[in-house]
Image 1: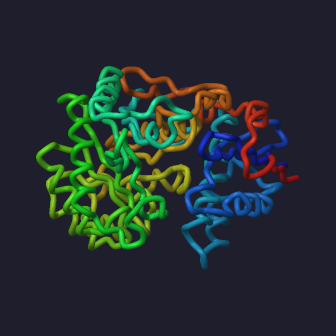
Image 2 (image 1 turned 120 degrees about the vertical axis):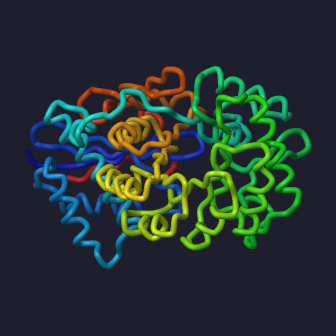
Image 3 (image 1 turned 120 degrees about the horizontal axis):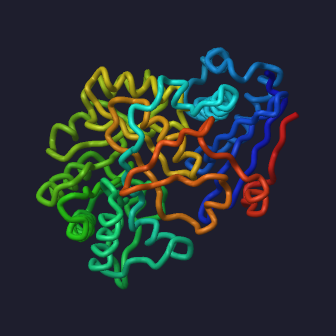
Length: 397
């Protein structure tokens, strides 16, 4: 089998673009993956195409040989966009290999340890605050937040996770200071009103969630360590599933973790085992978050194995489309040290049009698919019918 060409398609997902990579072969088997150029990673589309052009004529089932070659050609610029491009190609090649063998991708890695994966509802309430034109009415009161959490609890989700939303007149607003969208840029100081507002939001969600469903908070890079510690201190009496933060310094993150009884989840911004090792060596996290879209599935499995050496459980980072759900659930199925899987429930109403199969959830758990490859394919016509603003579909040879 030989790679004969590829195609990149870009679909409109409301407030963002979702990109799809199709790798074609001379035997008619195609590999699909999805990726995202919109998180400070402009240029990823061109880089994916540049790397793939050099793979024309190679056997796509020799996944490790291809990955080793790609890494050898990027030794002077490891990680970052290069790793995202390699990860994208990795995921498409695994889809081909699974389909060629007639097995799901998880079978290529020893088979599934579990047939259902516990999930948490990500960007809970915060997407409705930010994008009500796409996902439904925005909450206007703390009672509204509690009622939303009650809905998630009824559906059986392990937890809900919100980003920093603050009460304002008539409702709520997202607080995102690192991008300049909110006050606080660029100093990232946490003010008393931020701490108080976050605490009120979390309390309202916890009131609706009840005792059996967790509430997590994702603060990203929105504050300095001083602010993260103040937020953790304020939320300790309420109880939090985890506090999710990012920090570039392993010692600092470890210090924050030691200062609170709340579990700390982090590391979604890292690439590869070598970057994770610095944080794991310093016992900086309770939960290591791994992005299998950015790192690629093969490297993500290795990162999870490394975390297991440190007795740390992992959680797939997953805020893309349905194909990412399938990739993430496959990762969650093969690693023993799983904490929980992230999934976005709120999205544009036409998301399902892009895929031949949608994820199946039963009582808050995603069923692990057993169809060959990732378990879903892309409907090209549907994607082309909803083109994004970043450009037309691009084909390579």
